[in-house]
Length: 116
Ligand SMILES: [Zn+2]
Image 1 (cartoon, rainbow, N blue to C red):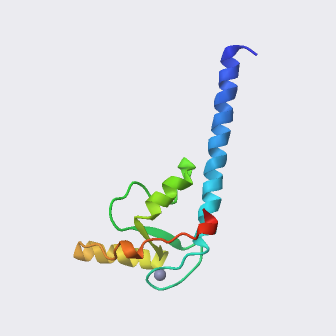
Image 2: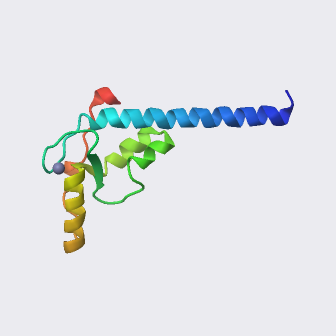
């Protein structure tokens, strides 16, 4: 195989591996969300759990699955509280109204070790 084709082949393989890692990270996040309750109302369903940033935000946790790095997800989640989509919208509404952030680090996501 000529060198240029081999390089293309390698690029394609790398792209496939990256896509698979992103897919695995998304699955991991869904499984994790199934174990998490909303910090404000206690509701639990993987379809509605979101991660509300308390401070410094690098990126949304769900969009970070694209990186395929579960370590990066965990680091980002440590800066968040889990909220259902309703409570998340209410928090942002309240924050816009008062200009303050609510909650503190003690509310942040605790990840079950079995999922790591
Ligand atoms: Zn809620």
